[in-house]
Amino acid sequence: MEKVATDIYTFAELRKEGFTYVDKTDALYAMASGEVGKLFFIARPRRFGKSLAVSTLKALFEGRRELFKGLAIEPKWDWSKKWPVLHLDMGTMQYDTVEELKKSLKDYFRAQAAEHGLTIDDDDALPEIFRGLIRSLAARSADGRCVVLIDEYDKPLLKALNTPDVIRFRDFFKSFYGVVKYEECKQRFAFITGVSKFSKVSIFSDLNNLKDWTMHPRAATLFGYTHAEVLKYFPGRIHALAEAQGLTDEGAFAEIVRWYDGYKFHPGAEPVINPVSLGLCFDMNEFANYWSKTAVPTFLIDILKERPLNFASIDITDDRLEAYEPDRPDITTLLYQTGYLTLKAMHRLNEMSVYDLDFPNREVANSFLTRLAPAYVGQEPSDAESAQIAAARALYAHDVPKFIKALKSFFANIPYDLTDRQNEQMWQTIVYVVLKAIGAAVECEVKTHDGRMDMVVNLPDGIYIIEFKLDRPAAEAMEQIKGKDYAGKYALSKKRITLVGISFSSEKRTIVEELVEELPPA
Image 1 (cartoon, rainbow, N blue to C red):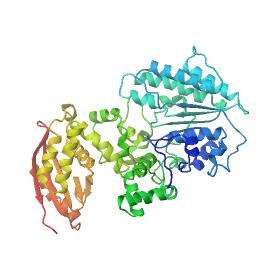
Image 2 (cartoon, one colour):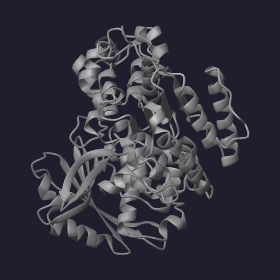
Image 3 (cartoon, one colour):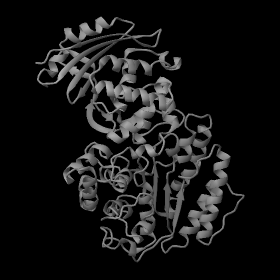
Image 4 (cartoon, rainbow, N blue to C red):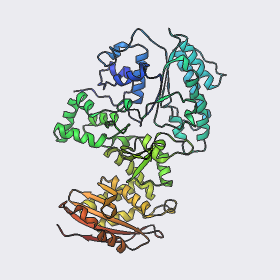
C-alpha cells in the first residue's frame, strides 16, 4: 500500500519518510536548467503543491542528490554545482497592518541570515536587507550567484483585499519584490509562487523580466495529478478505496475524477486532479468535500454579495483572466485564480481569446455554493442547510409544492442591499446557487431552436423546465414555455417532464406565484 502524505509539504521529509512522490522533476528541470530563462512565476490555487515544488527546487540547487535517486531529473542534473538558497515563505505572514508585516519580515530575514552565518543591519529598510542578503549569499558561491525562492508571495496582500489598507500593502510589495529584478545578475535562478497574479502596473511593474508560466503549456500539469499519474502511483490506494465503497477499481477512479478532477491551466492541456483532496480521500477511504475543510475566503463572499455573478454562464477575456488590480479586484478573475472556477473551453472573438469558466468538479461546486447560498439570502448556514435539505428531498420526490415552499424559505430574509439591483437574472442566479449546492444537475440559459430556457433541472427520473418572471404573472412564464415548445428538446428522454413558471415580486422580494404542469408521458 502506497504511503500518502496529507500534511507534509517538504520534499526532503517526504522522500526520507518514504511517502509516495509523484515525480514532477522533469517539468521542474525545464525551468531550473536555465535553458529557457532563470526568473519564473507561477500562480496556482491553494492546496496544489506549490510549497512542495519550492522545497524540491531548494533541495535541487543545494545539491542533495540522495533525495533525487530514481527521479527523472537525477541523470540530467549537474550535481557538482551547488548554490546558496534564500527561501522566503510568505504563507504565514498575514497581518492587519504593513508595520506588523515589516516587523515579522525583519525577524524572518534575521533568522535566514543566521542560518547562513550572516547578519543583517536592523536600521536598513527591508528592500535593502533583502538586497544585501542576495549579494552576501551570491558572494559565497563559485559563480557569484545564489537562488531566490519566494512561496505564497501574495498571502499578506490577499488578506488586505477589500480593505482600505490594500494600497499600502501593494506599494510596499512593489518596492520589496522589485529587488528580484534589480539583483538579477546575482541570481542563478528565482522562482515566485502565489495564488493570484496582480497586474503589471502594480506588484509586477518592476518585475517585467519574470517569465510567467501560469498558463504556459509546459507547466500545465506541473501542479496537480494527471489521470495517468494517479493510476501509476496509487493503484493500491485506488483498490482499497474501491473495496471500501463497494466499487470496482474502474468505478472508484471514475468517482475520483468526478469529485476531484477538472482543473485546467492551459486550454489545450489535460485536466488535473487536486493532490491534497485526493490524498485525504485515500486516507479516509471516502468521497467528501475536503476542499471545505479550509474556509472560503470571506472577501470572495463579500464581493459576490455586492455583485452577484451568474455562475451558470461565465466567460472572460484573456487579459482579465490573467491579472487584476489589488484595489479593484475582478471577482471572476479572483474565482479562477483561487481555484473555484477553471477553464472549460476557449474560442476566438476576432483577435481576442474568450474563455468559458465553470466549477472544476463536484467537490469545489458543493464546497463553495453551500457557503454562498446562505450569504446570498441572509441566512445562517445551519438554517440554509435545513432549507437546502428540504428542497433536495422535495425535488427528488417530485413534490413541487414542497420544493417551492423550500425555495421561498431562502428568500424570507433576503437583504435589501442584494435586491436593490433586481432583475430576472439575479433571481435566477440565486435559485441556481441553491439548486447547484444540493447537487442537482442544473443548467441555465439552455439553447433551443426558438430561444433559451431560463433553467433546466435534469434528474435521473425527471426533468424540470423553469421560467422566471419579475413583477409579471407566472402565466406569462408558462405561456413562453409552451409557446416556444421548450419541452420538445427532451421529448425522447423517456423522463417525466414538469413545466414550472415562477413569478418574483420586487416589492416582497420572494416568489409570489407559481404555475406547475406535468406533461403526459411520451
